[in-house]
Amino acid sequence: MLLLDLPGELLLCVMDHLERAKDIHSLCLTNSHVYRQLLPALYRFNIRFQNSSALHWAARYGKLELIQTMCVYRARVNVYLHGYTPLHFAAMFGQAPVVRWLLSYDGIDVNCRGEGLGLTPLGVAVRKKDVEVVQVLLSDARTDINAGSRDNKTPLLDAIKHRHLVILRLLLADARIEMHPQGQSASPLLYAMRKGFGSGGRALLAHGDIDISARDWKDRTVLHYAVLHNDDRLVQLLLQKQDLDVNAQDWLGMTALHRAIIKDNRQIAAMLLTRSDLDVSISGADGHWKIYEEMPPLCLAVALRRDHICQLLLEAPTNADVCTASGNSPLHLAASMADLDLLTLLLNQPDIKLNGRNDDGFTALHEATTRGYLSVAKLLLAAPGVDANVGDTCGQTALWWATKRSDEILTKRLLCEDDLDLNVVGRDGSTSLHHAVQYRNRTIARLLLCEERLDINVPDMTGWTPLVWAVHQADIDMVRLLLARDDLQLDPIFAGNASALGLAAERGHTKIVNLFLEHRDRLDINLPTLAGETPLCRAAAAGHHDVVDLLLQDPQLDVNRADLIGRSPLCWAVYAGHFNVVRRLLQDRRVVIEGDYFRRPALAAAHEMGHAEIADLLKAYRLG
Image 1: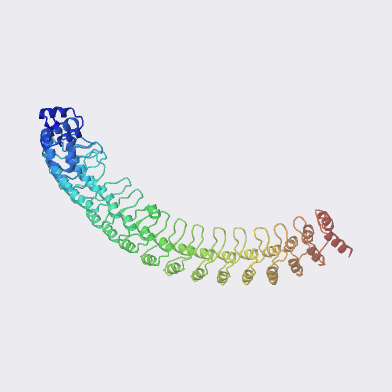
Image 2: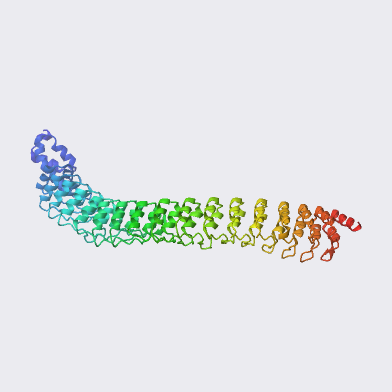
């Protein structure tokens, strides 16, 4: 007898010995007669041994009839498979009819939580962005609309996270919604703005029961984020709230107005300025935008070249002299950037401090001159009240900095100012004339030397006058320019070393020595150093024959004047072994050969130092 010809009772006995559902299912599919007899047994097997898994499969694929049949056989509708119930599966895969029928089934747990994130069916539907399923679940009075997941996300926050405006409005329209349920730290409105969900933010704000003062971990408020996302409409709605703190600062000290300036949003800036309680003096910084020092809004607008917002701020009105953390005013910033439009705008403000100084003592004119901005300097100098003699913390004026940069055009413009102080001494003791000489800038030197107010003999910290610097650099043209001034002093000794003539003699600058000797009436050719060394001593010691020859031609030269330890020019030349210099000195009848040094005559010194030729020369001179 064939298996299929067995009576139904025997087929059931056979089925009882099958351990797998697929074997039972295969048996059921042999023919329609067997199918009708064994299918109920398959349902019971699934319920008893497979945890009603057929319900989950049917919920996933929308097999409503199978679900209904399984429920007739008392399938467990709240059983979990892979962490979810059939209702979860139906919500997850958008099977709205299945969800509706399951909700009508007696004993269904509408708010059952998944084993993973702890989501309710409503939470699953919201995350899947299924509007129809959400509507079905919300229609059930048993649905907990505020149930949060294990990651502390309610359906409302999930709708915001996924930027689904329709679902958000459905949730907000439900009377059971709680904007701040117990245990939830996040503000829905702040969360929406952090996600850039402006339309959602407006929907939340229209709900009424919303906290607009909430802050995130960066201390930013809803207003901060509305400005950051350029949401003009939301900013307008927020500003209508009288309890809004429009001056709230984030962790960097930035207010909403700062953010509007950074985003260059003139419309939002104008809206913020309509609030009477807005404080425009608050300072903030943001390294991300290369704003490394704290700035008030006006300084920030100038630094970022926001011309139109600057105009709005000045019309507010705003103090035009407000400063950054380092003391820079808007005028300083505009000058340092050479922004003529902003500079003109600021200069037109009444009572602006044109000579205000920052922490370095710099004025706006300093900022222009240290950077070489001629057009900025001209604009500032044209403003009445600008004082070109204001010094920085070291007393250095705009002219001092212009000559330090060797800026000829800027120097020429500054020299047009009345009562300009030409003799300002810098931190290193240098004057503008020092700079011209040091940088060999004859144009600036001529411009300065034309001014009678110029003190040409000011020494720097090393005691060097401009003339000494010119000699040091062997700049004969500069020396000639300086000598053209009648008030030039040639004799002063610099730092106890030598006069200008002594330095030229020591360095062997023959042409410069000759220039000095042409002005013999203005110098003492025998002026010694603190060690008693005359220019002739220094030239002889260095072996400069031509210089020695020039000096010896002067009738007033004291050829035998010794230094403090008895060294005469001849002794210097002998000990140094300068044969030609010794010979030239001996040719001068004024030279005394018997002078000694530590009781040793020149001849003995020549023998001691091993200068045989010089010794022979001295012997011949003595015999002659």
